[in-house]
Length: 102
Image (cartoon, one colour):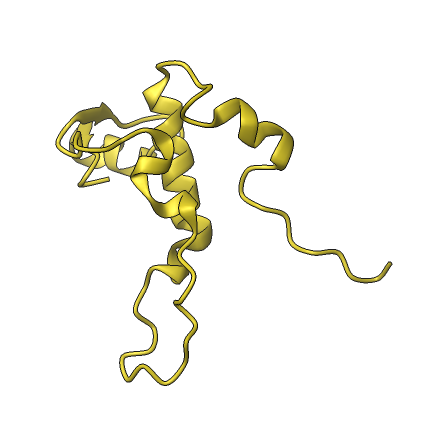
């Protein structure tokens, strides 16, 4: 078994625990997961082929959609920056940012 497929951002066993339907109101953790998803899979959302020659961006990872974490129309809701959420910005600029800014 020389080949091992890459792991997902959230392992299958944990995915059921953190799904929006089963997860409580810990929105800070959900924002952490969304930030981590963009760190790992953000290149799927980026427009890396302006001429449209390749069909590389045809699949959009569900982890990059805020509604996957239960965020719908509250993109202007503010969250405290800190552990797990853009800690470098909490030190040098504001302590809070909206979900849209994050």
